[in-house]
Amino acid sequence: MTAESARVRLQRTGRIARILLDRPPLNVLDIPAILQLREALSTVLAENEPDLIILAGAGDRGFSAGVDIKDHTPERVERMLSGFHAVFRALASCDRISIAAVRGVCLGGGFELAACCDFVICEESARLGLPEIDVGCFPPVAVAAFSDLVGAKRAAEWILTGRPVTPREAHAAGLVTRLVPDGDLDWSVDELAGTLLAKSSAVLRTTVRALRGARSPTFSAALERAERLYVDELLKTEDIHEGIASFIEKRKPSWKHR
Image 1 (cartoon, rainbow, N blue to C red):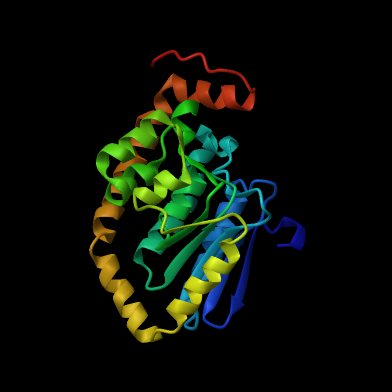
Image 2 (cartoon, one colour):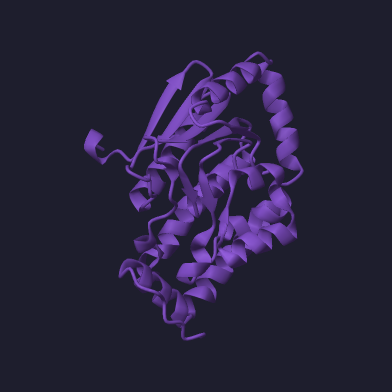
């Protein structure tokens, strides 16, 4: 992989591994980016030293605007889902602490990725939401995880309406750990990292495993069920194809309701 083709960058500093989504301007995750993200995470988890994994987006415009709509087509979607969901399964089962540093756009799969980290540090002006329903599909990770994170009714409203979610609302719901003024994100992440790194590595990892044990089996089964519905039922509707086409063609969808 050449420097020009790198969509995800991994940096290590002592007990911290930083994974940077680097596909400007909005760090949209296409299949190569997803596979590089999975590889970067696997590399970190295979190493003994890192205790913290910090996920961030390159530039100041976005954490990630989500998965590339072109990779939701029938010939690509199963590869996309397999690669992307492997990242969430790894985060949900590993004994490392993950921190999402969110500024700018954080939508769809980007919002799912941030939300499933152990800590979410978010700037006040960030743009959050799950707009998948407006292009004829649904967000499988959010379906599997958000009821536990923010409550079933709030999760249903966010997923079914596709409306924007303000950072203040996400903070009040418990999904955002710390809401910080614009410009303070890097400092706030470093402060949290310093607090965590002052603890025993062995004790941190044991405690993380204890926390994981309470919800990992439920999440894994729920995600598998959501994947089956997506592939076996959603992809057979006419409207998912209309939604994707309308987005690519920059027009309003004409739903067939079938």
